[in-house]
Length: 239
Image (tube, rainbow, N blue to C red):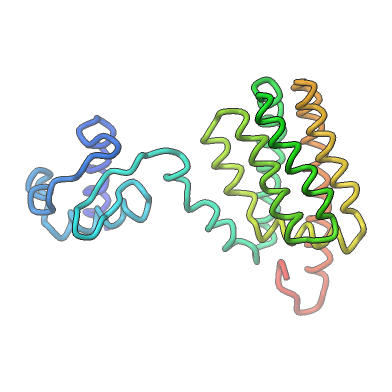
């Protein structure tokens, strides 16, 4: 494993220095191995590992290429990892805590940068959420789209990818199902409306406060829900 790690680092260094820029094609395996002073087996293992990490893309019958190296590509696996953490109550608490730290700041930034077209997109998803208030699946879809549109308005792709990754669709559906069952969906829709109003006013401070209230409310519901599940005899950590 130590030799493979060194081989991975050698290829990464070629990418970092610009010898292999985004979109470029790697030399054939024998040539790459010779250039790096590696065995072909080590070169192959390093390429496989970097392909899993979305740094490289292996195109069957064509060769291996450096990906675009954009955050949306490199952090692609984050959402999948979050979905796998659904049964870990402690991990879910950590994730919602991270969202509470990032999303209010992102909303504040969006308020200073959002265009009229982006604001109209946010409003469209808010209107769709109101219309779908009794349909958890649709609520979930438009909720995710609402927040994506807000964070997209920051123009920060890394921030968008991180927040999308930690806001798993399964977790969102679970929260909405619980809110509808508890007749709290109306309150949550009002929280989304407050975020939209702050964005409309281009008020960063108000946007940050509205987003903080919304995420904190979700966090409180989730913590109470997880605590109730943990108190059930024989229950899994997160149901």
